Image 1: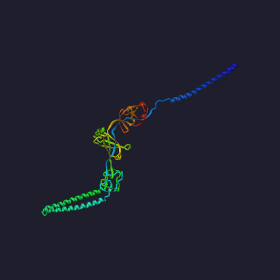
Image 2: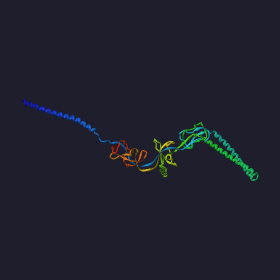
Image 3: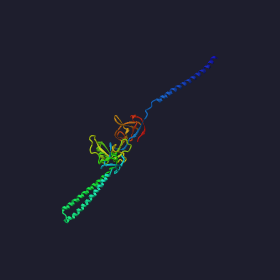
Image 4: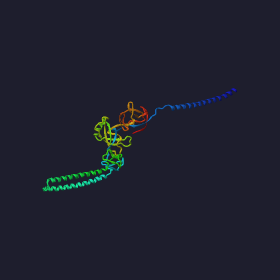
Amino acid sequence: MDSSLRSRVAAPTSKRLFVFGGVGLLVVAIVLFAYFGTEILANERKAPKGPSAIPVSVAPVLQEVVPFRLLAIGNVEAFSTVSVKARVDGQIVEVGFKEGEEVAHGHVLFRIDPRPYEAALRQAEANFLRDTAQKKQARSQESRYQELLAKNFVSKEAYAQIRTNADTAEAVAQGSRAALDNAKLNLEYCTIRSPIDGYPGKIQIQMGNLVKANDTLPLVVINQVHPIYANFSVPEQQLRAVRGYMSSGPLAVEALAPGSDQPAAAGTLVFVDNAVDPSTGTIKLRAQFQNGENALWPGQFVNVRIKLYDQNDALVVPSKSVQTGPNGQYVFVVKPDMTTELRMVAVQRNEGDRAIIGSGLQKGERVVTQGQLRLSAGAKVEVKSQTL
């Protein structure tokens, strides 16, 4: 009885222990999975991935007609410069312009007190009238004596004297006429007019001052700027090319002040000096510009470009895409699989912000214009922007 009771009591206890043990193992498994599983996921997130694409900007290689130009630094010179001076003595009583404002040809600049010259003119007129009357009287007397000589009423010597007197009166009258013209001219000189269209500078002698004829100091200096010149020099090695293309027609020239946001002034080459400067090995040239917008001003330094000819089918890329390394100039070319290739190139010349490529590239290829510092051959890239 006791043994059977003990067996019935022991059986449920063993089952409960088994159940409790299974539950405990399950809890432990869940805890271990939660701990180690989280760490595994974290390690997976921390695991290094492949290299990311480098963002770059690109531009296509274009094939265009590009003008071949020579570059130089030039100095602007007025088409003509006039130092205005007085031609008669006197006091300035009027100034008819403002400093720096454009004046036209014939515009009144200064007036000198005309009263002394008006009096001199009246005196010259009176002298001319007197001498003219005497000349007429002498000619009339000569005519009468000539008739008397024909009738032998007077001697030849008497007629010769009368004729001499008439010729003398004629000469005196002509001298009076010259004095009258000179008096008129001096009175006209009292009004000083602009001899050209241009811009006057600072007035050197103000109103109220006395001036002398042809004094050392000019009254004002006027510069003509329509048209205007730009003088510059190019290396003597370019002389043959310049003269050769110039023989086929006028060469176009552009001039632009450094830092200006205005369009370049357009002109033509009008002068090639007759000798090379042996001290510098350069030849002096001159271009003429209409300068309708006053883009150029006398004394100004400008960047000058002379167009010699048009280069057909030139390969063009932005200048900023070309890099310089120990082996020469190169660009990064973006291949169709979005990786880069370091390509050595030969740059013929730069035209503004563009580079003309002699060899190393083909039309339609894309070159990197921004982001080269992070690149190497074969690097994966991502195009962020493209310049056409």
